[in-house]
Image (cartoon, rainbow, N blue to C red; front, side, top):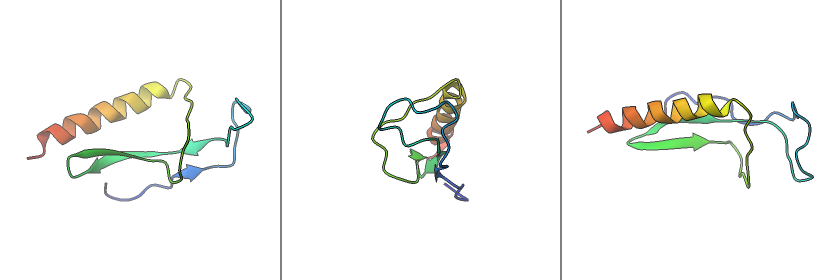
Length: 72
């Protein structure tokens, strides 16, 4: 996956707590490890909610998948 970005909890709740189990904002990394797309959350994650940034995440996943297809 190359250089590791800082991932994991930020301690922030930019949209407030969604549920009593909400642990706050989480940064993640999307990359390739050999031919496998890896999403690194930095910590164990039971559930995750997205706002409009879901489009950017989807685009990164598609881009990583296209790169994975080119690996022989």
